[in-house]
Image 1: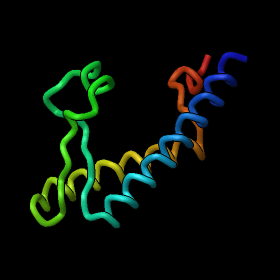
Image 2 (image 1 turned 180 degrees about the vertical axis):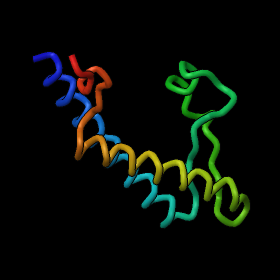
Image 3 (image 1 turned 180 degrees about the horizontal axis):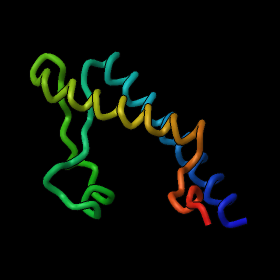
Image 4 (image 1 turned 135 degrees about the horizontal axis):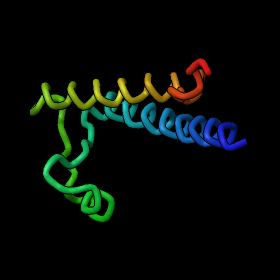
Length: 96
């Protein structure tokens, strides 16, 4: 039963992250700017203070812009994989 709940939770979170990544990539491509995660702040600062996040414009910082688009697309593909196939547990494949 616990394994089943992990599968449901993993798929729900993956679907939410897929939708969020699609929205981020789509708005980044349309507006020609994307907001990134903060590299210098900790996770608590990132969660509490949204003003520390950097905005990369396609015209002024094209390399950083495309790196952030690539990171979001990689996250999208991995979340899509988890949403389709579920969460893989290493102990589930062990032969007893």
